[in-house]
Length: 335
Image 1: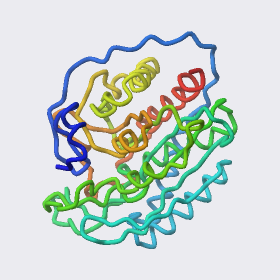
Image 2 (image 1 turned 90 degrees about the vertical axis):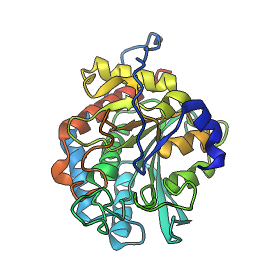
Image 3 (image 1 turned 30 degrees about the horizontal axis):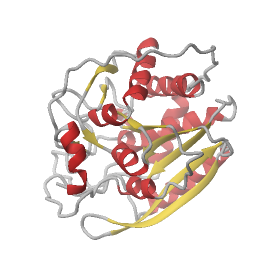
Image 4 (image 1 turned 180 degrees about the vertical axis):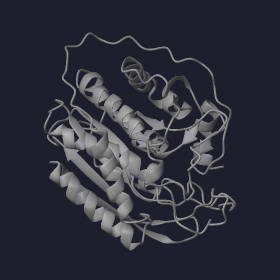
C-alpha cells in the first residue's frame, strides 16, 4: 500500500483500484441537496449517433497503446477535432515510467473553451488503451484491448459535448482533458513493486495543471466506461468524500431526466481512478461516472477482447451525455 495514500484509506476504507480488486457495495441512500432557484437555461441536444461515430473513429486506429502508431495517429485526430470544435488545444507531453520500466511517450490533450473566463469546470476521460487483455479467459492475455468502452466511450461523450459548447455558450469556461497512460498498470496476475502504477497521465497533469488561484475550476467530472448496456453508475466513495454536493446534484439531474435506472441513488464501491489524483493532488473537487456493478464489478467486457464497438450501447452514451450537458448548463452555469 502506498503510504502517501493512507490518510484517504483511513477515511474512506479499503479502496478498490482500476486494477480490478473489489469491495462490498455500500447501501446508504444519497440525500439530494437543496438547489438554488435558477432561470431556465436551454440545454443543447446531445447526439448519440455523433458520439458513437467518435468511438468508431478512435477504434479504427486500433488499440491506442502508448508508443504505438495507433496511439500517435489517434493523438493527431483528437487534436485536430478539438480544434475544429473551437477549442484552444495544448499537448502536455511527458515521459512516464510504467510498472515494468517501460518509458511511455505520453500526451495529455488539454482543450479549453472560453479560456478568458475565470469561472470554469473541467471534464476528464482517458484516451489510451490497456496493453494486455488480462481479464480475458480465452488465453489472449498478451493482446492489447481495443478499448471501445474503457477509454473511447468517455472521450466520445466529451467530444460531443465539445461540439455543442461554442454553438450554445454555457456562460462559463470549460476545459476538457484527455488523460494518457491511464491503463498501463501491472497485469492482474503480477504483483507490482511500483506504487501508483495506474493513472500515470492524470498524476502528471494534477501536479502540473497550470491553473492559477483565479481560474482554477470549481468542479471536475471524470467519465470512464460509459458505453456498455445496462450500466450501474453509483456515486463511488471517493467521489462522495471529495465532491459530495456536486455528485448528488448530478445524480439528481439524472433522475429528473428519467435515468434513475442507470444512475443509482446510493454510494457504491470505492474506486481509485483518475479522479482520485485530481482531488488529492490538484485539489479540484471531482466525481467519477464509472460503470461498476453490485456483486459483479466492472462490465463483463472490461480488459478483454470483447471491449469493441459491437458492445457499445448508444442509449447509454445518450443518457450520460444528456445528464452531463444539463449539469453544465444548469447546475454549473447558474452556480
